[in-house]
Image (cartoon, rainbow, N blue to C red; front, side, top):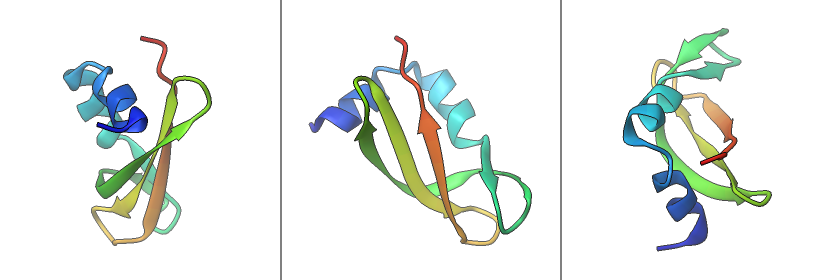
Length: 68
């Protein structure tokens, strides 16, 4: 398992679900759910989710601070 995925899985599942469902889409100008995302490391413990808006398919990103 790569480091970024481990960091993501270190976050409690209930919180990961909230994060996935709370991403801003610049195309919809609204909150959306991120789908088909990939996880990349950022900084010491943080990750970035890169994926698509569930509503319109536009690319979206979510920076996740991992203080766990």
